[in-house]
Length: 83
Image 1: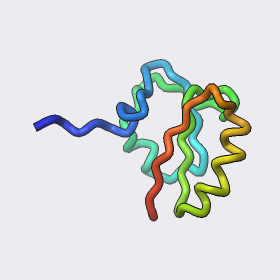
Image 2: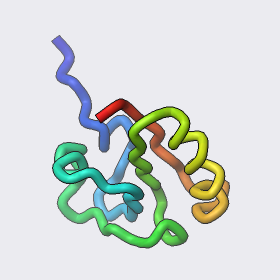
Image 3: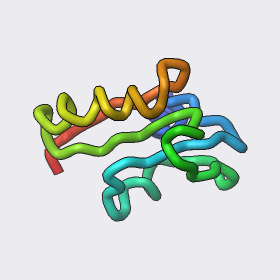
């Protein structure tokens, strides 16, 4: 049986990487399996942006502004579920 990958592994978060977390949900960020030396930075400086939303309509509303701030050269990990 192949072990399950963490969200951080699926998003290819590298040690020493920089990420931004928008709409942080208590306890969720800690469960992503991030490397210990990941730096949390502003969206404009992040290599990867995690955006947490409660429903699809909020995702549609928030994605264009996030992409505008983050820039097209940054990656976004889009994963949503009703919390």
